[in-house]
Image (cartoon, rainbow, N blue to C red):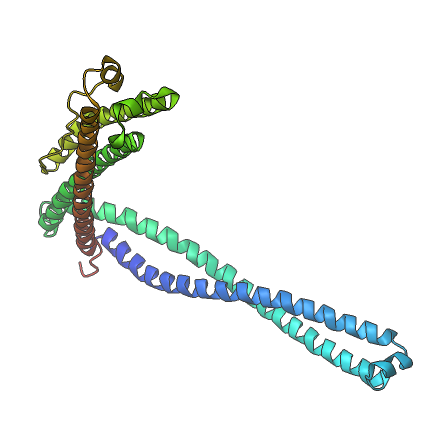
Length: 313
């Protein structure tokens, strides 16, 4: 067994103990915090019992008679006993809290060491991996190389998938913005759009929607490229925006009728909604595949750890 493998073996044993300590530390700390709250309540009770003693000592015999408390001496003794009981509980709990705090401080240091042990183990695994890969005679070398190659492939693919998801999110966001600007434009007619100030606002909203739609068309080109990088191809990922570039020109040139304006707007809306929905479905599919890739990568990590931490070597 190499010195690195030997130290890994030692750390694994130390970690087993340290992890149990960490669990107990968490439980003890939770109990200590609960007892602190109970202690505060007890202090308030002790203060109240002491105040009762002081108040009863100030009362005259006549006052006690009217309160139907019996003799003054009996009542004073009763209040003193209640105060002593509460004070003893406070003293016992204070001692218990002191012991718990002392133990927590000691365990806290061990828990800190747990983090150091984990960090050292990670460094030792890297060293052990280099030792295995650098030795052509090492029997574990082929298996480790195979795992490393597979992990590299999966990592590269996951990175490409993330890029595709980001590009797709941009497309969906852009198309949603376009649809928001269009609003109910599919029901507007020619005279409704030119009707004074209100019509100008509607016209501006349409132009903004069209600008976003044309930008989304460009965003979709990048999205298709990102999909191609991960071997995915989908048809119908293009916006059909027709020849509509300026609704202002259409309206004031008076070249077409209301129903044509409406039809063109409806066609644009339909195209944007359809493509957005397709992109959304694609994103869900790609993300599901990405999660599978991540799980495969983690499985290879577990296999790699099993090799690097094999205590029988």
